[in-house]
Amino acid sequence: MKTLFSGIQPSGGAPSLGNYVGALRNWVKLQERYFCVYSIVDMHAITIRHDAAELRKNCRDMLAFLIATGIDPEASVLYYQSAVPAHAELAWILNCYTYMGELSRMTQFKEKSKKHQDNINAGLFTYPVLQAADILLYNAGFVPVGEDQRQHLELSRDIAIRFNNMYGDVFTVPEALIPESGAKIKNLQDPSRKMSKSDGDGDQGVIYMLDPPDSIASKIKRAVTDSESEVRYSETKPGVSNLLDIYSVFTDKTIAEAEKDFAGVKYGPFKNAVAETVAAALSAIQSRYREISADSAYLDKVIASNTPRAAAIAEKTLKAVKERIGFPL
Ligand code: TYM
Image (tube, rainbow, N blue to C red):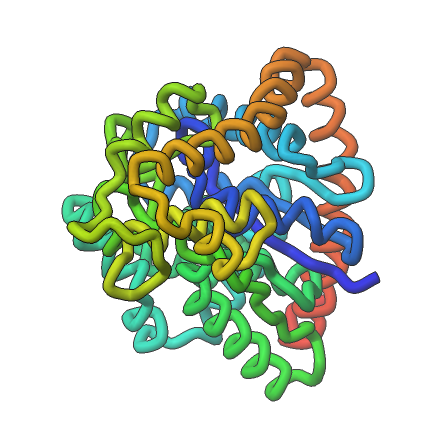
């Protein structure tokens, strides 16, 4: 079985519908075909100021959440990034093989520096190098992510290729697995930008995976559309297209089939149907989440058994890297 790696930041609250549609949903499905390593990337999360107790709680909540969505912690490896020191070690080494120019071009760095002008730290700048280390440590051939991670994945490939050219084939060169539909779910209030957890809790444009049905319905009802009344997928209709994307993913229908379902239907009933579909799909995950998050002993056991599994793979790769670059054996 080929290996696949992906990560998610434990950034407060439940994951967004964007996280789920663009990534987590595929993480679950891909378990059938790949050996999957999934990391809760707490080291990435500290590039933005945070509260210590909250971060610890968020990591735990994310662990429960990932299991509730269907990640199987016996078949797949599920762990906290900071518990495996090889990530930090390889990131340092790869920093020395990554150029400032490459990192300056990263859109996420530019966006985050604009948003957090009082805290443009070096970690924020080298964030994509840590991400490359995450992936390369596990020799992952595939990385399921949403569209916003494409650029980071390309950089990870470039770093792997550069390193391999210098030292022989140490790393597997990873490929991004970006879904055909739902790779970029938009903010419901502003469909020109992606739906993002960091848009803030009060934001009506973001659906969170633990939102109750009435809140899902009210957010979708208020979603920005356009002045026409035709449910059709088009670049000129980003709000309606976003809702069609969401609907098609949750019903496993193509966009054309989704459009057909709403031929001649007004925006009001269309939105109701989308809201019902989403709420129904989330309700099973939500009740599993409530059960799992209440079972501390089980979560402790998952972490205690999975961290050494992750560390064993990562340390083997790190050792090979250290040998190649000449660190004393
Ligand atoms: P993060 O935590 O921001 O997001 C987790 C995953 O959700 C996807 N995603 C979306 N997909 C579709 N529509 C959206 N609106 C949307 N918002 C988020 C993201 O593309 C991502 O796949 N740097 C990464 C975490 C990371 C990582 C890694 C990923 C660290 N190391 C190694 C892959 C491999 C991040 O911040 O994702």
